[in-house]
Length: 228
Image (tube, rainbow, N blue to C red; front, top):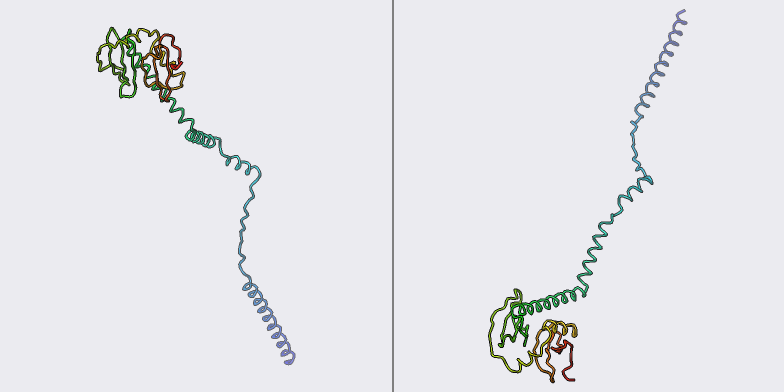
């Protein structure tokens, strides 16, 4: 009887130990699994979206330059061309010559208004004034005409030379008309003029700024060759 009880107790003890051992192994395995488990890192990958055709077209349209800078560049090129163009210098020279010529005719007009019956015997533009020598009412007068105001000053009276009187009597055209004829004939601006008899023909001998000399018949207004 005691022997059976002892055997039963021994079997129960073995069973209990086995159960505890199994429980311990299970716990160890679970602990090992927990220890082996690592936290999972969350990786976020950023993928750049490819631009759509519509956005590309919008960007292209936005990036296209307007026409205004082109017009500005064209204007700059035009200005540069005008600066480099030698014809612009020629135009400035022509304008200056035209201004000088106009001033000469204004000076002549001022003298004619002050001395309506006078005949111009001599004319010179080389000094600071326009200088005239005229014959009027039996006397010769030397006049200075201001280049800007066209006022007449420094009038000097002198006796009339017989040759000057004879030449003055032959004049039938206006002095300004003779100057214009010479300017058109030689394409220049009158600088000097003198009333003289050339081989029996009374003329105004007119010198121009380009070195030309033109003889204008004071009776007919025609250009003549004094050598003929």
